Amino acid sequence: MTYCVAMHLSSGMIFVSDSRTNAGVDHISTFKKLHVFHRGDDRTLIMQSAGNLATTQSVINLLQHRAQDATTQNLYTVSSLYDAAVLVGQTLKEVIARDGADFTATFTLGGQIRGEAMRLFHIYAEGNFIEATVDTPYFQIGESKYGKPIIDRIVSYNTGLEQAVQCALISMDSTLNSNLSVGLPLDVMIYHAESFDDSRQYAITAQHEYFSEIRNMWGSCLRSVFDTLPPLQLE
Amino acid sequence: MTYCVAMHLSSGMIFVSDSRTNAGVDHISTFKKLHVFHRGDDRTLIMQSAGNLATTQSVINLLQHRAQDATTQNLYTVSSLYDAAVLVGQTLKEVIARDGADFTATFTLGGQIRGEAMRLFHIYAEGNFIEATVDTPYFQIGESKYGKPIIDRIVSYNTGLEQAVQCALISMDSTLNSNLSVGLPLDVMIYHAESFDDSRQYAITAQHEYFSEIRNMWGSCLRSVFDTLPPLQLE
Image (tube, rainbow over all chains, first blue to last red; front, side, top):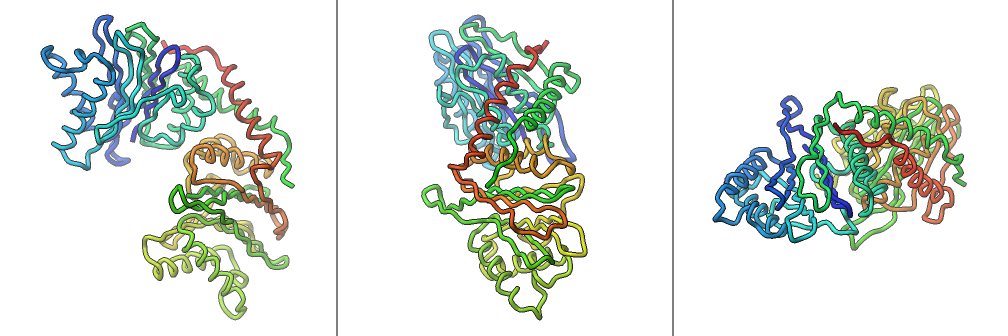
């Protein structure tokens, strides 16, 4: 399994991914699921992947390889994120058609291409996709349920990037606690609107002090909040 | 879908169920999923059901009907909750065999029979079952994922009944917000150890003041807790 969350907020975008893959509980590995396509100050594209690892690796490989040929339509030549989503969707369909319909995958694709605003897409195994909006500014792929309630309670389009990352980390913590097939390290990327930057990438291991601190703090704060709830009145 | 949670704690047991059934999003109904078998001061058994409504109704009907015949092994004559779980499992297998393997269901069965301690079982469609223990004092059936993290953070075997109900209600709130096929009213039952009582049953509708109050309070408290988290440090 996998858990990735991506948010398109007014001041920028954030991406948080786990890195565990598994072929059964007795066969787990670590693979990064966050991939960045960055060129000069022209574009920063961030992809997250969930699903069959052979499929997602092939899609990323083909996208990277084809991006070397400047005469073709590729992630470095497309003029909009919509066209980038079409390209990723087509490549995903191509790999699934080649390898077999059982080996499906999904992607998030977000970022910014000069000349347009930031955009965020959720790309399905069928190659089609939906776009995040002000009403629903985030997407999850993989094991989404355990970590969804906290995002719905905290995040809206105008949430700041720092609080959004904190919320994504708490959401990830809930998921890590509940699903063994989601595992550390985490990959975090923060993109500030109009920065065309790719430098704010971070890896969070089990020894990461800040992550440990807010995991513990969140757990104890929730218990404190419970103690302040008004006494049960059911009649 | 359905969301039911049952907890076996040191001082008693709590049961909280939603009441929505659906055959597609355009065909929803309200059916109580919490069923009580109570006789004098000898036994109080509480069942919750999830899955195909035709199956769960048939199982409850057969259990109720057969309980009229005092010469048979039934829920009012079995001498232990283990035997009650066997009986429910057999009845469930019988109905599924009669109606078809696509119409599966699961149950929780908890309570107390005089002569033994409280017990709580999770009964599968195959008719077998597991029992809650001090390590894992609760079971969920139906849509369990959205509401699981908060229970894992708050509830342990020694949690008080009042706080356990509060936690189950918050867990239900998270699930109601995320899955349209889980819906109000809720049915709540609290059983105090050694009471052999069935009187503490409550229905919670959308107009229920206390439930509305803690739903709102919980949401705003979580946001306050987020504001107190230490500033993001990812390096």
